[in-house]
Length: 172
Image (cartoon, rainbow, N blue to C red):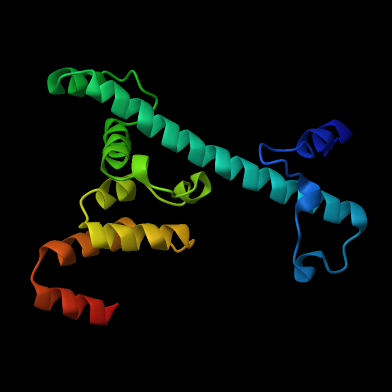
């Protein structure tokens, strides 16, 4: 990595943090030279920053798609999605819009947390009962992995037979 790249990486992010604020576990730095530790800190800083930015872009994209949908009638919205004007598949655009409408706009899930959730999973969270939605969002905020399958099981449980819900919960 060149000196100019290192200088770029060590810039302060929006929160006023820099790579100097990164604390690495001893097991990661054992036996390394100071320059290697510096590069490791710079890398962790860049990855953290980029992850946050990626989540911010997902949130912003979802909000923009929802805003457009509100200004079009259903036929126009579907024609737009099928037109190929977006650099993402139609289904992904619909999922992001559904997520924004169903829970994301009112959620305090961090931008960094959004990166670890697929857009299909985001959309399926919309269909959960309020208590289940709250539980899933709590898992996301705790950094737990939430998959489409997890949300689908919760959807079935929240809409299905109480006895079935108890059996599935016991199996988990």
